[in-house]
Image (tube, rainbow, N blue to C red; front, side, top):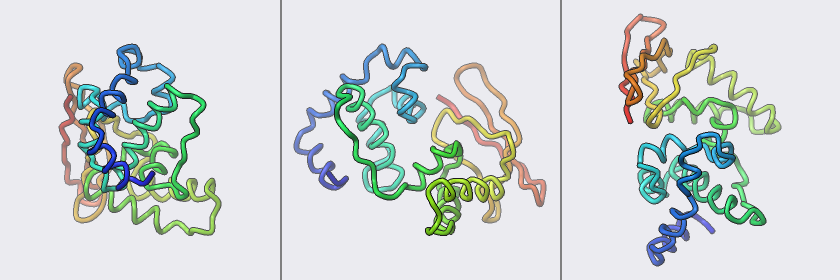
Length: 200
């Protein structure tokens, strides 16, 4: 069903959230290496919401690309784990969020960074195969976001800083125990530095 239809269904049948929550067992939550997490890429988002399925989905909403991608990732993978015979239908076109995940650059995110990433992805020629599109998008994103090898690992959702309309370069992360960390960025042209606090 479409996301607007799903939104209507969840409003009319709120009990569905209890059922979905029951599929995310304590066993899955306690095991970061559980097979579920190899398919579902929303552990950090779920963890930030105390592993509550409804809260996590509704934090992002159902009316944005990111929100829809999160909902599909969490709900779809919970259902397919419980019912392996169910075939999930993916969108015909890969969203920006899906593409970032599939090329290992889902560390990119944040209000301004999302728009820059979308513009880059949309600029990749549509006539390319999916494999070629991914390769070109990755090359361009790494160039614009100054990513060579190092990239931040976020606890919360990514908040990649932008300075004067351009993504800053990731420098390093300083951890503060298990509760949080500080990511350091700088503008490669001016040397201006910025930090982003990232806490549970």
